[in-house]
Amino acid sequence: MAIAPPEIPDQPSPMARLARAVRNRRIVLGLSQKQLGERGPISQRTVAKVESGHKDRLHDRTAAALERALQWETGSIQRVLGGGTPVDLSTPPIGGTPEVAVVLEAGLPAKAEALLVAHMSARRAAMEAALEEEARMLIDQVRAATRAAQRLENAHL
Image (cartoon, rainbow, N blue to C red; front, side):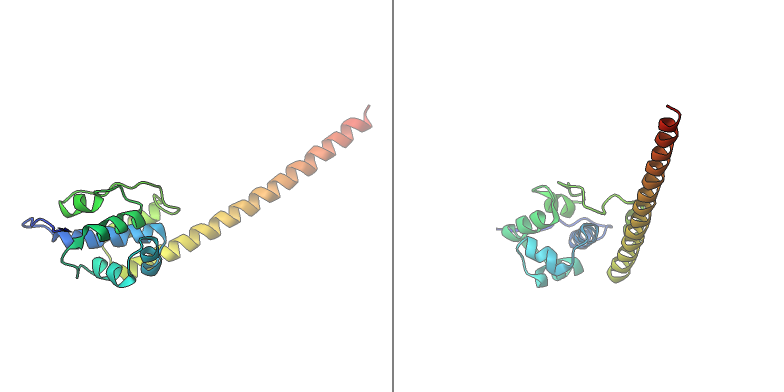
């Protein structure tokens, strides 16, 4: 049995909505089309067809594999096709960051989205590494100050 999307007038086609939702979720998860397919398992070609909106319908088994790979609740694809939103089962590593949300809401072409998300993710990682290094430096300074204070205290005893 195959899932056939309902027709909704004056809105993007159901498969166009699904294409955008799948692409956005894949980007948020930080996966390539190949990596997403491996999670399913489904072919990279099927992932590409879904994301481009060139798939007319999905077989139940393919929809289930795609939901599993995207970490969506069962039935999420049917919800998207009906005009709703998928239910995420997990918080992705970079999901929920303000910069990713802004990029995905901008409605840019898929390649531009992927490049911007990759750039913003790299910037976030660099900033987090710099903050971690600063924290280590501050800890070392506090330890040194604590040792110096203890030496002074011991000298006065």
